[in-house]
Image (cartoon, rainbow, N blue to C red; front, side, top):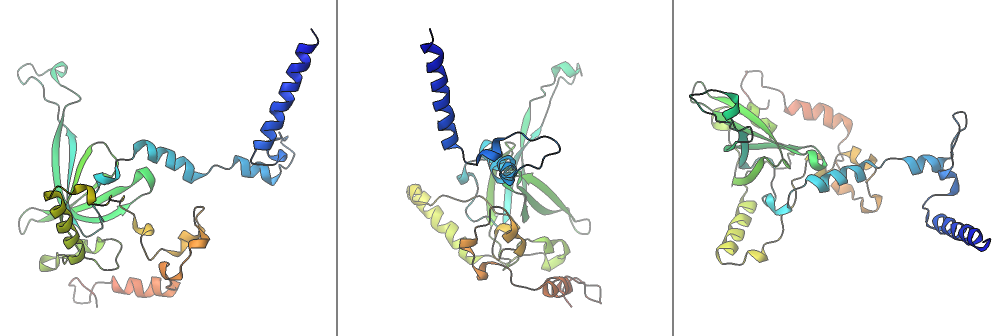
Length: 269
């Protein structure tokens, strides 16, 4: 009868030894401290919540296939976003709420210029701007689409636009008349032609996988504050990939280019 409890204690001691060996933090990180005691630094390291890991769990849950997005999608491109809108239709004669289908949806398309890609992880959004109406009543309309929303069913590129080193196309809000146009990106346009030729020839498997659209601070040159993030890898640091401008250049020269000319017309001085 005494052999049973002894064997149980021995097994518990072995399990505790194995757990101690597999622990990633020292023993001080697993102790309980009173309210007036200062925990060891290892206790804080163990209880620290890694935002990147938490956000990646949500991203893996809501993400779409990478090939859902066009290749090298960037601000300045003219895109067509197909999304679903609620469209409940009931009995027009009875006019009661019981005859309506609350889950009824209809497909809608919105064409416009992609102004920016914002957000991180599963919360990324696309801001699309279109000019609606006829002169002189034309007006700009902008819509923000969550990239990974199940209501966004398709994203097509109608025209590749070239905006140089700019990371967004917000300047299109100030463009009037003939200036409301972005030149064609010849390089990416030729890429689309090559990929379409491969699809027509039945060689779609030779087309490389697309990538998720990146926001402003994920494209080069990177802003300097990115180096202070938890997921920054110092070994991959390259000075040419980081914005080397001083605060004076960013604040004074950058704002000077955005001023409206004294004549009242849009454009730089």
